[in-house]
Length: 185
Ligand SMILES: Nc1ncnc2c1ncn2[C@@H]1O[C@H](COP(=O)(O)OP(=O)(O)O)[C@@H](O)[C@H]1O
Ligand SMILES: [Mg+2]
Image 1 (cartoon, rainbow, N blue to C red):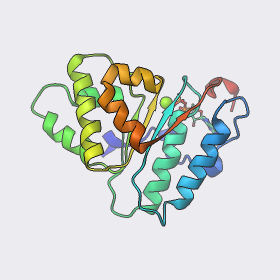
Image 2 (cartoon, helix red, strand yellow):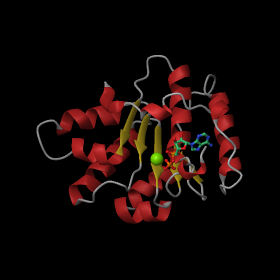
Image 3 (tube, protein in one colour):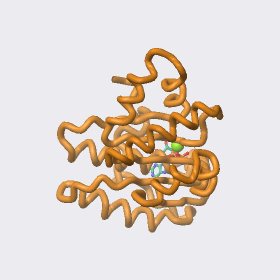
């Protein structure tokens, strides 16, 4: 279902095709951690989470796609889903379909929630995001998050319970540097 696919330009993203980013603080450490994680996927069935924080264009969604694609290649029968937080909130707006979307978002394994914090702010939207993340935590579903917000800001926005859970199960990788989009790369 096209609703839940990564953007076209990230469908083939892989660590092997990722350019080095000497201008990005935290990049090398992230690459080491992700390489180890991806190499372990065929033999280690852990469902640990990842959170990528940092400014626009630094490569967060790209790295999320590297994990997503690697999981897809190694986990037969899993239902991978990718959603942008703004679309997710739209899906979860009050109405008849809400429970259907909720279930799809909770059951996906893995689920990428791209650009969390970038969605239009509403009280119910934040409650829905909290619900999905908490249910996924309870069910130990692999979750990959990207955000322009720091973990502290995510805590202020979605509540300490949410960020506490993320901190417990996620590898948090913060990247700081210029946008790749303007680099001609
Ligand atoms: N190290 C890299 N190697 C190759 N392409 C990259 C790299 N970092 C980013 N890109 C590409 O640059 C663009 C912006 O990166 P993206 O991951 O979307 O940034 P962010 O999500 O942090 O805003 C994307 O098209 C992505 O595929
Ligand atoms: Mg992005």
